[in-house]
Image 1 (cartoon, rainbow, N blue to C red):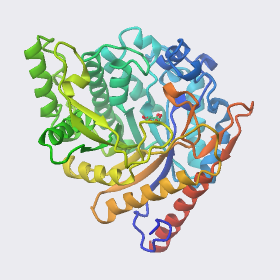
Image 2: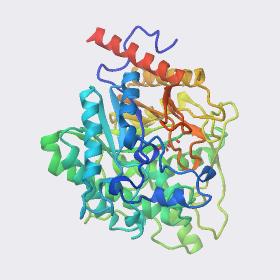
Image 3: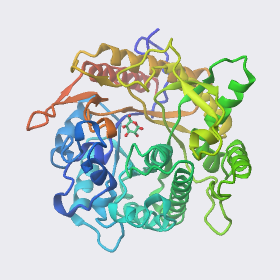
Image 4: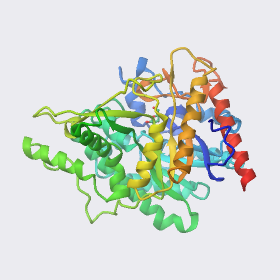
Amino acid sequence: MSICDKRENVFPHDFAWGAATSAYQIEGGWNADDKGLSIWDTFSHGKGTVFEDQSGDVACNSYTLWEEDLRCIKQLGLTHYRMSLSWSRLLPDGTTRHVNQKGVNYYNKVINDLLAGNVTPVVTLYHFDLPQALQDRGGWTWAGVADAFEAYAVLCFRTFGDRVRLWLTLNEPYICAKLGHEDGLFAPGVRDPGVSAYRAGHNMLRAHARAWHAYDALFRPEQEGLVSLALNGDWAEPLDPRSPQDVAATERYMAFTLGWFASPVFMTGDYPATMRSQIEARNLAQGFPRDRLPVFVDTEPRVLGTADFFALNYYTSRRVRAVSSPPGTLSFKGDREAEDVLDPSWPVCGVPWLAVVPDGLRKLLKYIKDTCQEPAIYITENGFAQVGAVDLEDSQRGQFYQDTLLEVSKAVREDGVNVRGYFAWSLMDNFEWADGFSVRFGLFHVDFAHPQLTRTMYRSGRDYADIIKRNYSQSAMKK
Ligand code: GAL
């Protein structure tokens, strides 16, 4: 059965049908109109950090070509568009000492154009692009970053909050902490295994909580919006379901990924118990510093309950097996004592990490419902990559969206999960971080070799537009 054939309306009438992008990945204009440097400007300008030394200097040039993006959004029939603000475009040195009016004007135009086109903006404040000036003071490992983030968030709520009702503070703190501070594969490129990722993650949670409380106290009464943070999570299953070691390793894997951030915000106000016990045991046994996993203190704004909905970025599923950690070496993986592997029966699309497992999303949605007190959930990212020769007739990706949305509809209908919306990653091909432009996630192809950076709808864009249209007209009939 396909999601298009379905008579019964499974998605709520006000379901958000969206696509997502982020500032650094699409805007270009890296030094235009007084924008300050971000850590991705610095990182991508370094040698050997990004595929073929590419950068987001120009990317899709959405800073200039926004109206082209708007045309794409309308062609898809989106009801919602998820975008991010570039912190260093608005605040060149990361602080509110100087607000860059040209940056404010740009985002005002984007937001106003969306609303005029009946498209609801969903705005992320931080999608991996910390102002370099704040990195110079220690970035996410510096406790003062939470003050700077709160001030930035307040500025954004005050400036755009009369029109924006759905906010995300941070995108994927796990990726930022782990790839940016443990593995050094993403900006700021820090390799400090077993230490900095926990510290960065902690300051991100503090920063998020501060922004949520500021919104709650100062803006919510008038603006009546909702604030959350986007968490990425793989669905994980034991490699050998009969092995108690693999079962326990799978629990650890979930605790050290989604749980790392979901537990403090949605579950207990602290990191998962397994995460604490693993790290503390290793500290004790091996003489590692006692304070590697920071503690939440009462003198700071509470973190528990600082999300008005659950925002989930889901891409893939994993099989997990237990591994023992080599003594004497500090590392995140060593703490976790769990290793993820691909299941050979799952097809992989484009990039090696992306096993396509649509029903993993259904299972993860149910897991979130059961463990996070039945929150309203927005799937804020989900997508399918293309590499190599461009294939505009990408029926595989269209099928992927169809299969995935069928699983989402089952989660809604059969599992009673309160899913409020779905955002395809991405509106168009863009700068895919360390993979540069070699990996394409778009519903629109972007011709990066063409001076106009021409956007052309993939067949999967037509398929997604079709899914939206059918579900939308069904819900209109039902209303
Ligand atoms: C996410 C990220 C996006 C996008 C996507 C595809 O982790 O938030 O910016 O790059 O992955 O890899």
